[in-house]
Length: 120
Image (cartoon, rainbow, N blue to C red; front, side):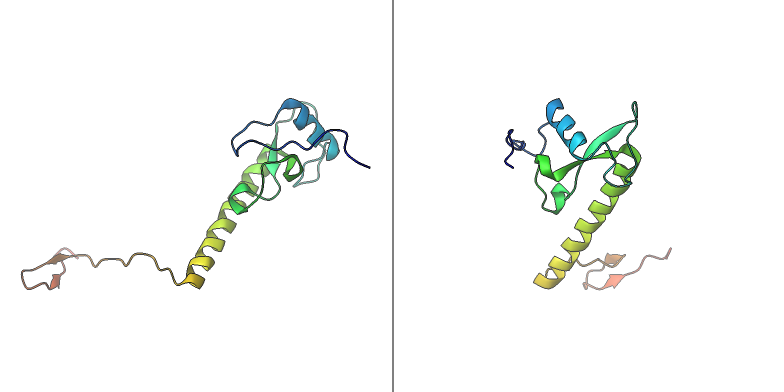
């Protein structure tokens, strides 16, 4: 069966989700938290979460959003950022990109030799 309403897609990643779309997403998921599976009761704070995070290649569209309780959302956001960092680290390693070399503590003499300070 075809949709009677076209799928909502954000103009950019920061565009707010309209109330009518929030309601459609809530109804689509049966009023359950996407992460914990618990029913969201009246008066509880809930947010929309990207199923595939934007930083990991997800889109800002209706089918990539799901309702989630605020406590669970904070945990998932931390996990998404950690996943992005791990992917970036592996990608840099694969491409042979290395970080900056750390300099030795100390100062240079006129001969160019690095001398450690006395207090170390």
